[in-house]
Image (cartoon, rainbow, N blue to C red; front, side, top):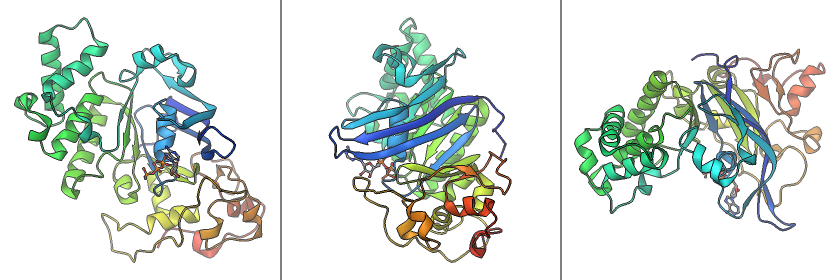
Length: 352
Ligand SMILES: Nc1ncnc2c1ncn2[C@@H]1O[C@H](COP(=O)(O)OP(=O)(O)OP(=O)(O)O)[C@@H](O)[C@H]1O
């Protein structure tokens, strides 16, 4: 795993907030999220169902369905021409022009979004042609063949209808389409969830290979921490519409700082290494429509104390000096640690 913290940012999400609903009782589902994706980096985004992972990436790419409404924020993207622009300030025309070119999204269940009545080849070529109207038939065919080969499917399959392909193949076709215009940023929302574990593994390995070859950066969403540790350079953990920990993948996995991150990691069996007992996280995430003040994890946290009820999540360095910005956590225990109080023994040292 490489340290990308000094690489140039390709996508900078700043203080992004999203509500569902337009009235006073709207649910504040995303609450001031900031996140940076660096060139060539794989950033894993994890958290339980309903914590806002999809809302974050759909908000950041302006693909949020109604009644989702962006209430604050900036999303700076570095285009393929090197220019930085705020996606939230673009006109609809500008958005359409840069989508697929600067960034592409592979949706949850994307493999089912191929049109059943058209052959796969036609769908790939149509997607390319929307952005390359001057390409002739031969150029489109050549690129479609290249893309199929790139994701390990025989180009003969360009003549197949979607139902003639397996789920894994259809998902690969969607990945190929997303990479057709060589975007700098690829966003994948649970791209392997609907597939069996063998196929999941193959697709994850393929994404890793393609990333090495083509150099794009990835935001990879999943709730499966064991999968993330295999592919991510950095992991951000979401809870109740906020990022509560963000750090280098290996450090975060071996020594998770936030009690929620610990619980999440302990909920999944490790793919490698010795077996360990699985724990869970007691309780369920809060209802975002009625969430009050204080740390949103307080009711489920083994280390809860009075201060948590007033604490507002604020990501800060995990080290004592507060200088190291590579690993951040939003938990009052670490603020208290910086003021000289000892951390609970279970949170110090490496994960057992
Ligand atoms: N159209 C909607 N109207 C109202 N609330 C919504 C809507 N879509 C999502 N939400 C709420 O927003 C919150 C975040 O949902 P989101 O889908 O972003 O979470 P997620 O972490 O991606 O979950 P999953 O892993 O299940 O996809 C949830 O509490 C959900 O109930």
